[in-house]
Amino acid sequence: MTDASLKEHWEKVYTKTETEKRGWYQKIPVISLELYELTGAHTGQKILDVGGGTSHLSEGINVQLNQLTILDISEAAISELQTELKDHSHHIHFLSGDICSVKFNDTFDIWHDRAVFHFLTEAEDRKQYIDQLNQYLKPGGWLILATFASDGPEKCSGLPVRRYSKESLSETLGKNFELKKTVYYTHHTPSGNEQKYIYCLFHKN
Image 1 (cartoon, one colour):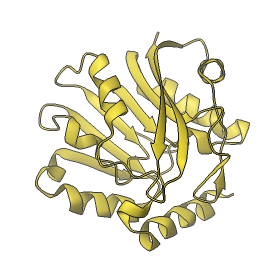
Image 2 (image 1 turned 90 degrees about the horizontal axis):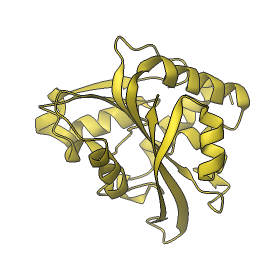
Image 3 (image 1 turned 90 degrees about the vertical axis):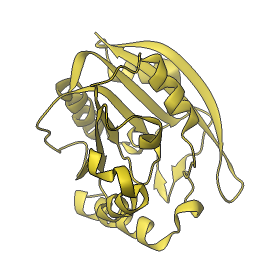
């Protein structure tokens, strides 16, 4: 799938499906916030939420004391989230783009990704993502990464995914990232299906 067709796919998903009916919808991103707390959760941190879409991660982070950037390939998702967050949206930097190619003006202390990386089924796309990760996550920074587990679904939102164990995820990311914590989680979709996730907290050497 080309970059243009991928963007078109996600624009359609966000414009044609109501928020609470999307398969990945979470009212409160509990596991992400628990792992965020394990990083030390200092103030003054620069945080990137990759594929933030309409995630409510920002509601568990003090965006007045930290610098949060939310990235999503879908402009419709960004617009919807800005409207939902209302009062504190002006404290957040919203950016529409592809994580594999977007250019940032800064580096980050924490990189959060719930369910973007597993869509990268091609080796070249994974390499580009990891190159970005190595470039824009500070040494000593933290990576919170959630993908479908090895016994999770083979597709999401009509697209194929690549499933992971903690071992295969560590091997894919490479020697710069040390696994600190693993959480297995079963997500129940709005339609009642189960999706097995693996959440991993990595420290960048």
